[in-house]
Image (cartoon, rainbow, N blue to C red; front, side):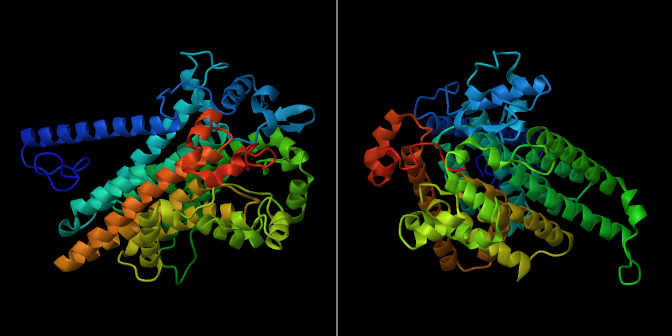
Amino acid sequence: MGMCDGIEHNEMFSLPTVSLASGFRVRACTYSFFAVLIIVIAVYYLFLLSNGTLQIIAPEAMDKVFNSMLEHLLRGEFTVDREAIGFEAFTRDGETYAYFGVFPALLRLLAMPFTDIAQASLARLSCVTAVVVFVILQLRMLLIVHDSLPAGSRMPAYLAVMVAATILSGPQLYILGSAAIYHEAILWSAALAAAFNLVVLRAAFGGGLRTRDLATLAALAGLALITRPSIGAALYLGTVLLVGWLAWRRHGADRRERPLNLSAALGDASVALPFAILGLMAAVAGTINFARWGNPFVFADFNDYFWFQQHPEFIAVLHNYGEFNLGRIWIGALYYATGIPYFLKTVQPFAGFLASRVAGVEAPPFTPLLTNPLTVLLAAIGIYRLWWKPDLTGERLAILRLALVGNALAVFLVFAAMMLVMRYRFDFAPFMTLASLVGYRSVAIAAAGAGPQRCRQLRIIVAGLCIVGILGSHYVLLVHKVWSFAVPIEVRLALFPFAPFARPAFQPGSGIAGPPAR
């Protein structure tokens, strides 16, 4: 970052030792710079989310659901108030439930001493906090990877571009269309996944996985499971793979002659503690599921979903193909990569094919090549480097591979889901971020060995992709606001001239102006 005392690379977390006094000044300068940067980021995100008003306490779509959930939880109930949940209600045995995870509700405990939790509008504050935490963790991961580079490969220009892309492009930007209830759970699950990947990267480029690292991974996976199950399942898989790999390394010393010493492995705190935490958090999630749906392994029973009950065609998709179906993966991949299924959903014979297999295809359609092309390119390079031509070896390579496999589960779950929804793109963030950081490291090392002309060309390409992502993400945010039912109608009308193709958002019966797709 090189902003203080001529330091050319980031020294926020590992400062050079020059002298005690100068080192203290550099550290203070760097911390001050990042503190100001974080405040600026928070204000800018609030500006976008609040439609320019900068009001952090303001009503949002169904913003009383988590308030109601917390009140009921404190009474030992897993229900919610019917008037709070509205058309998102699940009704079973005369009681009203929500399928949203309880973690965002539990966070409201922090606000209870200061406000009437039943009436407070806290969704916007929660969403801004979550997205800022997410971005801070993303930047911290970037700095870990940057500082792991050989000294000659730490190029300030590339780091600056990556910082700009992290802050100003990607799903963390265009999800700021509103602080509707759907976004709050997604943002907090993304923040938990970013913390998970931070621990992974710190272990991979530091001292390896320690007992407290594995316990932290297990705790983050458990919290994600009671926030958003798709991310929770991915983090659970990643934790199990990493703990299992460590147990095999430690207790299967001569793997060609004898198998894993299971008793010794289970007696190892590095194995037993994270598995105990995973089991405890799974029991918590199972208890919540059982209280809601009568089955500890079910996170939502869409047969009881009010919105589906008003649309028999959705119930037919659920019964014929299930909530997740491997046969949908290619459809989901096409939607999230190109947006094409959205355009085909009213064109025969594709319309009939999609309607029989997918319960909803949400606007706006777009491609990540518009909103975060740099991340996509670097992620592709990172995957190639991890599996086909690794430039990392040993423990580092194994940790990153296993964590990436775990993160990939969320991607496949989203591809196979019965709804194709814009905000679900955020579930790709853990996988894409981890892969792209590996790609960034490889590109930085390669660039250091290139000639001046090649370096200049690479800088132009990288900067160009970053600019495209920033502009594309802001435009998709604008279109998202025009299309979203959760945005005040006066804001949508004001932005409509900049996205005239979004006219269906204002047509009754279009299915877009009403309740959004799941």
